[in-house]
Image (cartoon, rainbow over all chains, first blue to last red; front, side, top):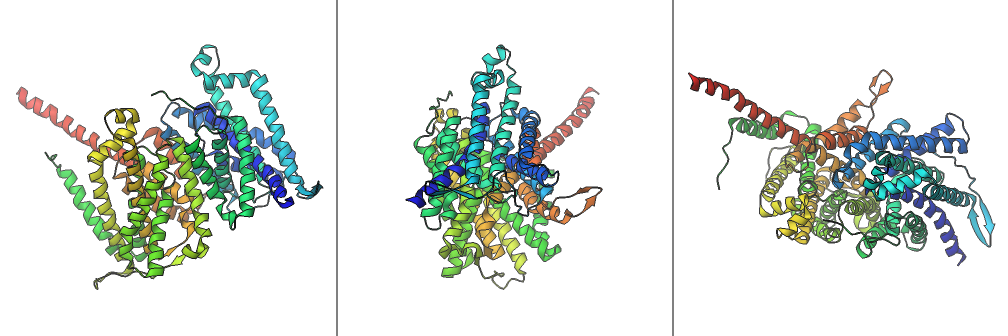
Length: 293
Length: 342
């Protein structure tokens, strides 16, 4: 039983990381009905930026963390303005190919600048266990949980209490009415991309100390984040969080209790995605969508 | 059926094309011949992806996975049962095609973004699955097969034989794709791509044709995977990762979505560009050094193509051809007009 709980606890921590990348996906999906395949690679790029800030500019982790979030925001806004904007209103297939172009480009840029050798990333939390009620809990896991909770609180406050947050929600729900009321809908999309890039960067900087840093590190995490977003209902931020934690726990259990489960974790991610899409496409918290033809 | 008049220019292109295709292995060295055989293999895979994405409008990031199915079918049959390699090629097409139909059935209910998600997950999840069941697949070590040689005592080197075999098969598959596109099935594919609602209203069965497109596309990928395994006489899970599926998408988009000839251009690009990029790596111009991988270029090209030339390189060539035709007609017109005035 203790072993089981142990896995659940560590699953929750990893799940928080999936949840934050899933949240980034949801932010863009809500804004423009698009699954951003480049989200993971953008997060990887951000994480490498923070690596450079820590290793070469000799900043401490938290300063680098803050600077990276800000830079990622600018990067996200710039990508929306420069790359995505010309494609507004184009078919889904076109937009998907554009995000895959971004995926390939960011993967290449990261590889070109930082190389393909695995690097150790020093995170903000020590990796040592504390005993709590008979369970060994890694301080790193507690730190991850804390950071994600703070981030969620900030996002919640932003979307419910600030003018910009409300304008963003209005722009995604009723673009035409918002335009008439003076909301700059185009910039709200850019803001969405910026926020998503920042949130993704957080997930990258949280996961990098646990796994090694390399240009492909976020690809499997992106798959779990997609699974989380789909499970929670791809339009629901709350769903992304609940889905992320569920997937995290599920994967920890699969990895432990199924022989050779480590290899099969990605397959389980695939199964979750396909089953949820077939059985309940709106996920746990999404609304069933009605499509006008 | 009325055949369109064939322009003499086209005839010249066709003759030159055939001479080049047949002549390539006689003038290039072993390595380059092998690379061109690989081009032919990618032509097969890209033709299949084009049927699915270019003609019926369904995205797949998982065709690399179907190539793996084809490749492993061939490798396992040759390695464990000693089946002659050429027998396994059609079998690989069938097995991969069935796998495609099976994936195509759930894919029916998924469109656009969700289909991309599911096939992306397939591409990522398959290599670890292959590693896991290593009693069949040999895990990371993969499966080594005996190298092939030219049959019937033909005086061809191994590479030359591979080249002619792969090119021949690619030619057959090209002709088949050409036929499919111009048939009732092809029209149904395009109707679905352009508007599912309109297609249904015209009596096109979405379920049947979408699944069929998936199956066909997977069969093509299966043949490509099988040929790849035969050509390299080796197969392991890592060669069928997400990277392969992405490069197939890159090839089909840059080559030309919805134009069969685009598969040829796309295949030339995805096979040769990485080779040149590797050669150029380490070359320094000032402080700028080339990357050993063409990913940045590929990514940028995807975005630029979608923006400026949605039908890719083949679309541009087609446009150039029409421009040439139009120019010829225009330059002739005033002449005939002038003679009439006299």
